[in-house]
Length: 95
Image (cartoon, rainbow, N blue to C red; front, side, top):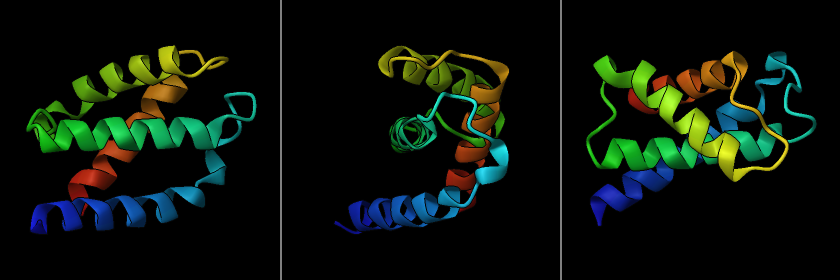
């Protein structure tokens, strides 16, 4: 119960903090918020299953970037999506 509450609280805080990341630009044709949501969800899964650590951020970022690009129509797996994934994952680890 405590772990679920913590994850939900982290997700809410991260969602709020990423909402202001307009400086990243709209590189996904208007689907930035969908991409961020997907990256956060996939990042939380990786965090909960133990595959996300400080040493695996880059690898996990590449993986979830590719996953979300496949899942969301009109989004390509580019260095910009990997960069956003890295930012999201580092935010998850910092909380």
